[in-house]
Length: 603
Image (cartoon, rainbow, N blue to C red):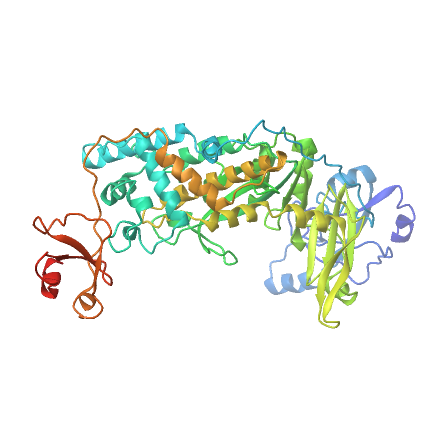
């Protein structure tokens, strides 16, 4: 059968080349072999089991002469035959491997269409009967259990280090916390300045002596070191405090719109190893990284400490979740604690967002997602290039949708990509931008999901800003103290935001965050504080002036006091006088004039 007649029946049979003699060696097709099928493209392989072609060569009778044998090998003709094989057999044996592997997202069809907007109900909270005190709001987050925990482990750690406890109590821990809250508002260059006689700040210095404060700060602890040395948790020294805080934050009622972002707790030391992270575009570039979920009002409801590969050591993840990248794992873990996921929308930036995340949140949890996305994570959306979109001018956008997810590229100052399955492009809104050409603000079109993202994404940034307004001083070689300071500041910020929300429900004007923090500090100092036993009151004498002032012999005129009294350095019958300049008491006898030298000596 010739080749032409074989290809005429190609719809019923398939083509395979088989050797005429099984003992032949490999070779190539000669130029004389006719191949008329233009679709036939043979793939030559090695002489293995997967070889599509076996080349046969005829062997002549063995010769005793080596030269005769070599000449005969050169004149050998390579013969090949075409054999008709059934199509079913050829599909199984002839081509065991596929010629082309389909590309990722090749089957996803993107169409130029919009998606329906999810109707998210407005959050409604039951108004309280009356406002509570700032101290009561603070105790909702920083509970008595946490204070007892700190007191117990501080005594335990001091006993392990010193052989005896420092005998602290929950009430003394409250005094310690009140000092830290005051220090966040009244910032001095160093901690010793609050007690120094030249800069003494009585609001803090009267609560606790300096040495006692330094002792508490030296031994304050939050976990037992002997039980957590072999733990896989790298934040074991501070973990119990964060777990108790997280439990209280989850009880705060939230809205249906959440944002997920990262928070940096500043720390420049080297004692924490690679727990300390570096992020170039943050105000505090060095520190500990936390992932938080917050509402648009700034209240943080859930948080997760980042510690590398063991971040999810105490979290149960399914096999599908374990295959997700880090950002998707973080968002999925934080969204599992949302109380009503079917009505909720989560907003995140391009560090977290991907097409896989948007689809997985919808299918597994029922949570919708809107977020900026990097161009290589859009799921293969065929959007216009940045250059093409820039030529159309500011406000131009392009969008494609597939599987209920819309990908949008919008040109503002530069091109930005977004993914969403909650809000689409329509209805369009406008935003004001400065135009260099007209030297005035102009209105440019803005898709609907851009407006929703800008409105609800800033919850964590708002909380971070409030925390840094009055920040607890926590510089120390012990790496866990900055995290403790963040816990204290976050409790103040969250409790003030809850208080502010309830003030709005009752149509009352809230106090500022500074006044709220000071009110909590005063309450911590005074609550459950029994009056001290009666003893002689210590009167702080005025500080001694500098020698340059004391001995300049200029302007130290005596000032007679309106209230007569006794001078501790003078005998009876001596009246009391005060220097107008250096505020030092002078003495003057009834019969002798003022003696300036006596003034110097007495001081």
